[in-house]
Image (tube, rainbow, N blue to C red; front, side, top):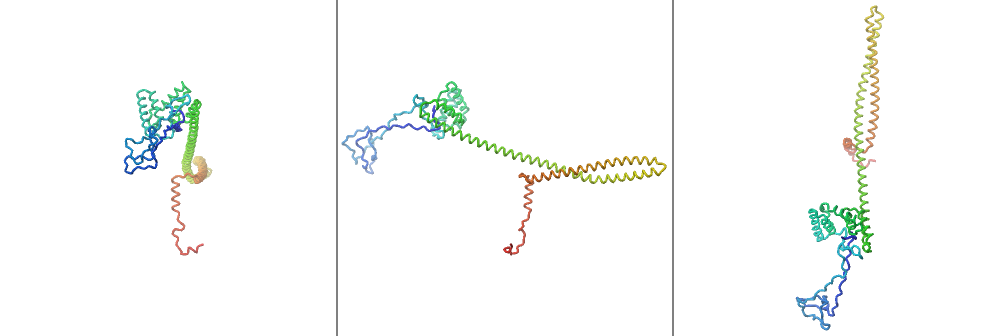
Length: 399
């Protein structure tokens, strides 16, 4: 399987052009055939190298060339330097990778079709229980065209990775397995650090300078991709963290605003109750004081009668009863006055708290819908200074 430079396009091996034998006689470039001649031959066409022509004979410019005797085109000979077959490990070349493709290179329709055939074959082999064959076909398919990774692989990616890892435990220096595992990490998982680790081992194991150079370039590209990925992930993480913190902050502010509003509503209710109690006690205390005054007057009258009458037993009982009533009424008056004082103090405290909360509410950027609606209504109800003002016709004279 290909090892080096998955992301780098394999440079095609230079093909040695076969030396064509220079024929002594060529058709003259300035010779023209008749326009209506059906068998005309291009002026720059050379005779085949294996065609023998007498040195002293030339092709007549005004003669037609028979269709069955047209000059054969120059044929290219097979290149002398044949590439090593795919996935062949040679002693002097290391791992030969004739079919390596750039990771971003678009696949051709033929390679895609072949890859899809291999992919379907891999799925069928796995379904029938031939996992080893399925892994091999799947590896060839993703090498041929990695766009098939968009399909549901039924777990073949994980099977391929596990197969490579298991085999590397037995042969940790197998270059092909290391390269395959690096390819899987880079292409299938986008795990660039793991891919770099595999390709670094390949770089250390191979001896061919050209393969080392290409593998080193691939490692550098993977490092750049890893840095870009890490930077993007950090940017996304930072952005998400900022959004989350901002959201939490807004939620906390809204919650605090809601709690504060509920607390202020409760305080308003308590203040209303304090006002009500204060009013009731303010009316009750004078009434109790008047009742105490009346009882004191009755007691004074009963006391005078007690000392002026000879039969004072009746007045004595009345005087004692009134004395007890006066003591009870005095307690009621004192209790009412204490309650009134507490109500006044509570009302004063609640007034201060509500005033502070209202001031903080005005300074807060958070507004309730009722506040916004009220503000809009207030703005809309404000009269325009210039609206309805009579025109005097002498606006230009105004200072």
